[in-house]
Length: 218
Image 1 (cartoon, helix red, strand yellow):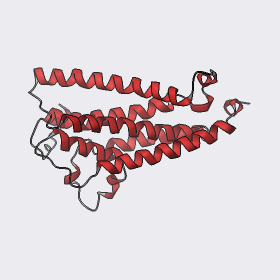
Image 2 (cartoon, one colour; image 1 turned 180 degrees about the vertical axis):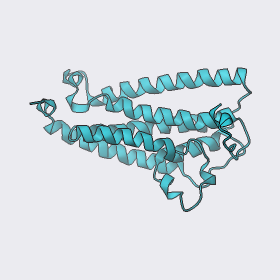
Image 3 (cartoon, helix red, strand yellow; image 1 turned 60 degrees about the vertical axis):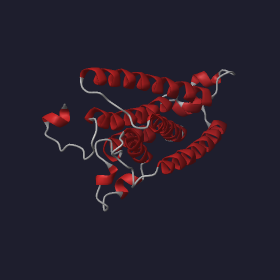
Image 4 (tube, helix red, strand yellow; image 1 turned 90 degrees about the horizontal axis):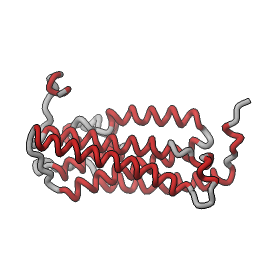
């Protein structure tokens, strides 16, 4: 509705306009909310981690799974409503579409875990960085435009972002008339894996030195 009211240029891709928006917005939401959910676990200083049967991995996993459950449920409901009330929606490659959704969530968990590990040492700074990163992703995730239409001199501003590659791959899977020629889903996977390794190394080191007194106020 917003795009129609503002008279924005229609996307240069044949297919459902609702599906085009969903492939960008929902992957963006599941990515950003996974980051927020993981950061909300508070890491080594979380009182829940003092219980012997609880650890950081379980804490992060429970928070991130709750987030992806809500997003999948919302996606299914909205897609069903759009299919019934607006137009018939067909997904060309459902497996690839679901895989992109999973990678967007996994990348959000990895980035959130990295920020969580660093927030033990820089709590105020990482809170600002997290909010800034989420605002930047509103533009540089490419959720409202196609990667193939970005000018070459601006492409570097988006290619660093794993979510940008995931969204473009998702559109390649969703639409039979679109091919992702400038992005690579394996870039997002390798970046996610590297961030996971770094974040767990930092988390392991932080648990040796973290102290409850860090949060105390004089």
